[in-house]
Length: 320
Length: 320
Image 1 (cartoon, rainbow over the protein chains, first blue to last red):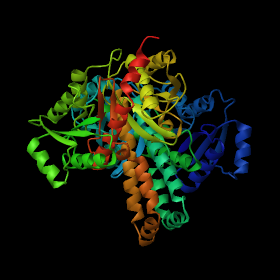
Image 2 (image 1 turned 180 degrees about the vertical axis):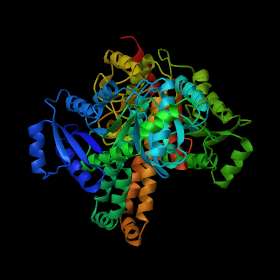
Image 3 (image 1 turned 45 degrees about the vertical axis):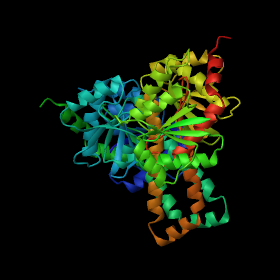
Image 4 (image 1 turned 90 degrees about the vertical axis):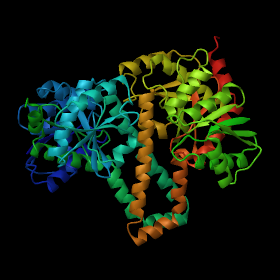
């Protein structure tokens, strides 16, 4: 298991990337190698600063940061040549998707790659697919997402019978736009998926549901709106809890609850979103990733490689 | 000030509608009359049960509930004939929008009505427009929303210089779909509005921003996703806070904080969303409205009538 990490990608790179890699090496013995891709001298200095010294680390120099895209592209090369099993980046999502699609190419039978982004759900994890790789999707693209999301949920998340919903502006079959109605009709006829119909906001968190299909524009906006709401709620709650000494004391006594909620609701716990549909494992991490988020992105990469999700996708697409 | 309330509309009607009307009458002397529209005998019995007896209440009998649409339509009639200044409904949104558009007609120069739905923002209130009246909007419709949302924020919410954003999948000018890019270009050229560019999820809550433009499909999904996140966070926090006795005690000491957060983040505190663009004041309340939500929807109706938002919209649309 060899992973290629874009060490320069993300708002807090390279420091959190180094720390995330260090933590992942300590936690996951299955990871035999992490390639840190980026500016060589910078990364060497950072590794020294953060006391990361291991024969499981190899620094791969990528000359320049061109619009955040260059180290990303170099990282993809390592997967293309077979030196690495997966690449992980918290850099510019558009650049990652473009590099991965061009260099690794799409799996035969897939017309567009899509990002599966996990949200906490009472019954497990619900993946928004596509979370932004393909903003102006066609109905046919969402059929590919349904098949790939099902394979990912089955083989990586261990869900026996993944439930697939279509994001719409109402749960009734007839709700939606021309686009969602066409997609709905196609999904009804797609074998090998368990399509439960249109879903709405509350289904993301409360309904047994594993894959929510939408175009990348909608998915990106939904994901960011959910994240922003959780963040605002957390911030406002903190303000209220420190508004007087009694509340502050009460909050201190109940602090385990806030910590647990934060763990459940934070993207850091999930860490990375697989870009499904390319020949290779590609994990896209949040731009504002912390060390914990990077560590978990590396874990998701490892699990996705181990569970051979692309073989499962190819099998699902093969003519019966 | 006479308001027509669809007394049979909403998941918890008519009981919460009666209680909401009763509370509004007690709080707002400016409301001289509330017409309760719905099944006469049912409403009379409910008024008796909830001890609502006032010469400021008139029950208007509407024969049957046909797919939740009939009392809504009858309520619109009261506005059309001038008997009422505004109508308020928590019933089927599509039916309300259709009745209002057909019977009251659109304001001259407006091509589509839009629902302005408020979200709590650190700097005041941010209105999503359109929250679902017009799912497949054209760029030109959003220009109308920008003008109407600006007039509403200025005249009803008292914002001197309302800031208008366009919901997109990134803040950079070049982000978005064909639809949002066309809309962006038109907004740049629209006089009388203060357009700040593309906005994302976190802007809804943290950035000074008063109107967020989107098509009704996107707006509806964003709104429901934000509501669902807030609800899930509240529920999960409650579960965590009651997980052991120490946490439960701490939570009891800090309970004022949870109450304040709920008040800030609940749609009940806002109560109603104006349907902008029709000749008349139409307030659409949440389907799952409580008595408090109905009370606040009646308040929003009163404020919207008092501040003559439609005169302001007509003025903004008049050729210079």
